[in-house]
Image (cartoon, rainbow, N blue to C red; front, top):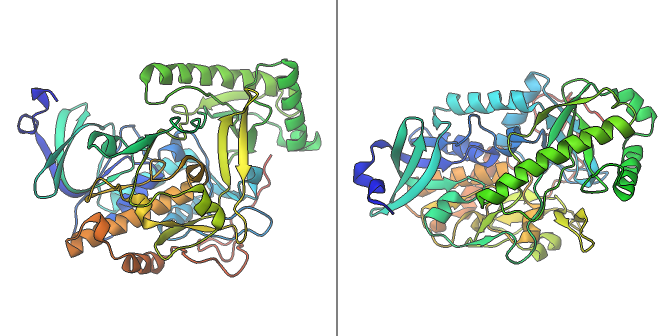
Length: 464
């Protein structure tokens, strides 16, 4: 560390009780949960110009609220419901039943969601900074941490009593010396995806021509006959809130490390190239898309995994497939293992494995607590899990639930003057249940009258 980063030479921006790094869906919920107790100061810092992370940078569907299959059950509640309610109030949301095997998708307008995140954060009185990047971590005595940030105003430090790492890449944990597994070290890292959105799609014509089944057949034919240079035989395109528009998850970029800037640059270029190859394919081969055009690419290429922190507990594939809900659980998941990877034949493919039995498992609190720190929590896609377990538990309803649990845990640690590992998990579970979180297998099939959302008339649309 250079002398320039001596904490005595960098201006102190703030002294904060709770600092959340990264305003993705996990970070936003962590901040909202922590701020629900007015007695503690909360700061949320985001490197981009808007909040939401993957929820607004590249996606438009919350998965994980419901289990997959023909009898879906709602397994996530609490503050995430508040986000859905805000979107539903302006008709910026609808349900897509059992989309592509992943379960009921809660489709939303990502541009409206940016505003929803902004309003929820500011109304909660959270100290909120955009365009601000973490560059260093300097530990001090008395359980204080100096985080050095850079933004257009220069270098500043924030002194925090507790930190929640919601950066996606575990940047805080990495800089503070926590141990982690780098994706790709033991199993191939999941591929990256540039999502894109298209306008002027005739959806009625598309459905009459065979819909998804037809599109899949033509995509396979184009891949095998190389009429279009697609990276895979399958891909998804679904209706958006905006009439005549579709959103896709089709591009796949493998064998690049998102933590190495040269490789990330190559991935961004390749992702854009593939997106416009798909545009050509859709216009040439898919009825209803003849006059369609790309109107937007994801803000950056979607990264599924980089660093996964080693926590007090590490979620494993075996735990997921056992379908057990331990007493230490702070959230539920029913998402299948959905591993986007390169197959033995070199083709990019998606590997699916569903949760047997009830189709639901519990995620222990220890997965949110780095083993190497007593004042840090980790939420979102950098939480403590193996590659396979991560491929199941990375849906946004689950990452929001992680943030919700960590935010309440932080407040308990401050109230009781204990560290992250000394939390009373039974008390935390009771607090989560009190705000609406679901921690037991629901008794009945979920429908729009039992979702916990204010408006019971959320529009249902089949995916296209």
